Image (cartoon, rainbow, N blue to C red; front, side, top):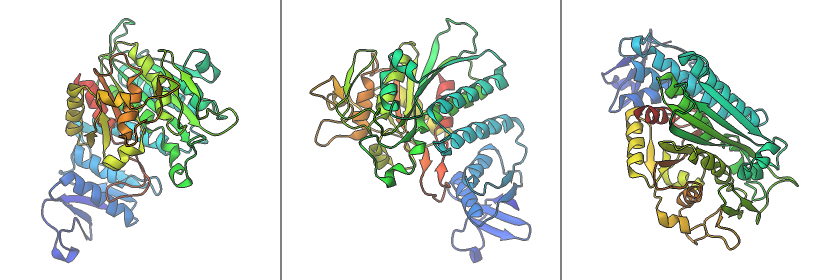
Length: 427
């Protein structure tokens, strides 16, 4: 079926302010106040009518219009096909967006029985290597996957503690994208991602309703990987390091327990008061490693707290940082890419709200009424020498939708890939 765009309102026979009309040749999307939102909504409506094969016709279909339609039309079930017009100089950008978002959505939606911690690390490394080879040639990517007991032996005690209870033991991807070829080249950025391939909550067991989507708890790892891939496709020529902290949080005789004390490589001791606050425990190892690289800035991404989702809903990613300039850069990138980010509070006083009687800090808040997203960020700050500078934490509330909306099908969204890629290229 052919799909065209029109600036004219639909005939009243289609309803007041209708965004779709039809005739013998196909369907017309009638653009309204926000054209791209209108297109995405219309694409969802078309798909929901069971129309699975469409062709976008007319000169009005440029890069952003095609992307908006693709976002709305894409779904896990009944995938269908879209015939896009030729986009000329924008074709490479469009193809790269498709490739990176397809990768990100695919691994977020993948069941945890096949996407185990080591598989996640392997797939991410393979994807970045392929992107670099496609756009820059061979030899630009090196990586190591530290897995299983080697994590404990090398002192990655947070990842090991969280993941040791599963039959699928944990893994950490340490990847170096270095297009300069100079082993001493400075590092522009370190990207750290939470890769919990399934989160049962551990002994702080989640109810079934909350656990049903926990194969998606590796959304932060997927996001930073996709963003680096897109930045490479867009011409990134500076060095970036990627750290994915991958584990499965399960219950067994080997699993970590409430009251355990984890000692990290930077000397910080953590009391475990809730095994369902595991994401921050694995990210800590990644942040310690990232902090050693003397990068211009560090960004970590994680589906970390329900508190962030309560605050901003399912449509925004939350950003927390004490570095106002870096937040401004991130929000400018988000605006340029038409993606939704919202700043939540994080101040130095939050660092005193995770106290422990038995260790330096606890992995949950210690005040009667605390800001959960802020205290989670405060926990992470203990694993950076100067957390007030050059560090952004992104609590990824918009990576996945349990139920469809008028803009999105159920499943992974890919929101944030373009913004982080933009940030890497803007520096």
